[in-house]
Length: 159
Image 1 (cartoon, helix red, strand yellow):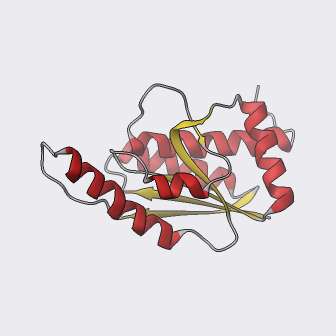
Image 2 (image 1 turned 90 degrees about the vertical axis):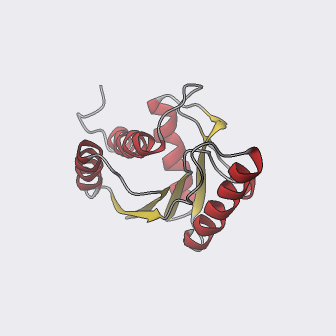
Image 3 (image 1 turned 120 degrees about the vertical axis):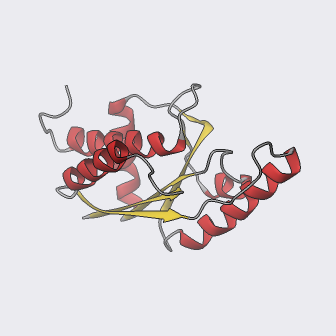
């Protein structure tokens, strides 16, 4: 069985996001062992300077890197990543499963991911050019991973 880790900055603040993520984690349990790891977000001022933003990104990145499971295929979520349709994303998950039994998705905070984390991932994932709040991106990711496994397993979920 595949192991899927989702590393994410911050806790889910809204109950509808917690409920949605919990639902997809439950559904995914038929296909994979899923572990969602929340990493503390770095505090900053209400109107941060560019250097303060870079400091936040760096500190959050250091925390995230410490949590990446050994031997996992790392997939950072970032705007520079590749966009996939659902079938292509399913194929990507299948291909990765041939090389590793563990996939680790990494979601940065409101300022994004450190370049060091982006460099670790052979594959980078983008949900498009639109900006999503990082907490919503977590639920979208879990749904898409569930959809990808559903496609691979010929489930009726994907239409």
